[in-house]
Amino acid sequence: MAKRKAVQDAEVASKQIEKGVLLVHTGPGKGKSTAAFGLVLRALGHGWRVGVVQFIKGAWKTGERDALERFGDQISWHTMGEGFTWETQDKARDIAAATRAWAKAKELMDDPSIRLLILDELNIALRYDYLPLDDLLETLRKRRPNLHVVVTGRNAKPELIALADGVTEMGAVKHHFAAGIKAQEGIEF
Image (cartoon, rainbow, N blue to C red; front, side):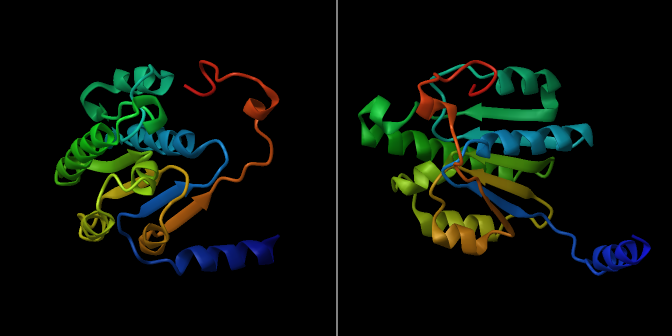
């Protein structure tokens, strides 16, 4: 173990770059937004100011929003979606909602007090072409050097994956919903 520790210590010491990272949580499995909100808690615990923009979610009340809003001015939370397009049945309305959410995201990116920004379900908005991908990628590429951004949602675009510093794909091994168990407070929302 002493030899293993020396190898590990050398590996850690070799990492010298410090910058805001772009993380993508994608894949068909459960836990993408949940993992992002875990990072929010970690950042809040360090006294950071955090921004959250939800691109699709919005039609239901969530426990994470209720809990995190207790941090007051330390968190800037914006639920801007109106639900999934199969709920709204109005693509123009969905595009307008995503456009407003992206404008809010850019506003938060420009706020030097925000150190972590969660763009929840942005991948869904990109999947359905609600936002221009090139503009989005360029904005993320040119963000402040110390701003950490987490993008969640299934079906991340290959171009976003290429730009990201870290990508986690949540795999679907087994999901209780497939067994007929409904979405439940405290687990899904």
